[in-house]
Amino acid sequence: MAYFLPYTLFTLYFTIFLTIFNKSIDGFSIKQSVQQKKVTQTVNAKHLHFYFHDILSGKNPTAVNIITPPDGLISSFGSTLMIDDALTEGQDSSSKVIGRAQGFYSVASQSDLAFLMVMTFSFVEGEYRGSSLSILGRNPVLNDVREMPVVGGTGKFRFARGYALAHTVWFDASTGDATVEYNVHVSG
Image (cartoon, rainbow, N blue to C red):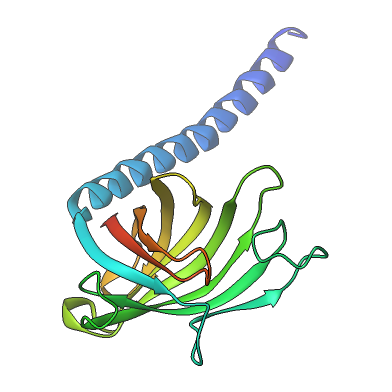
């Protein structure tokens, strides 16, 4: 009899534990498969192509240095620029403006020229007017093509995930002005 009581209590507690545990596991499994199904159904891959015009020179720059490192060089570690750059359909800066790249970038590497990009592509024309995409990532600017993550969006890009490929098509070393081609691939 002394052996029977502990065994019965153990079995009772173990059964209660498994019941609670199994509901959590089943609930998680059901929730996970529903979420996977929703993700599979809502994947709408979109490809956007535009140009980014980063102007540091002239009377109306679109990028201004807000933090200058001790050595005073804009290309040195710690230099930070705030941007409100035009996004255009074509490579020429006078082509149709479809949005703005707003945010900042900082020289975030001590060993090479790599920026930390924190920006939002805010669209003002076309199918994506009123929508935006957020970029947050490393941009090793001396590479021919750089990949940065799309971490979210608004409007037609709500819950967006993807990546942006940047390729510098024009750069003026004397002013720092640049035109960068962007190919952005998003789903969500």
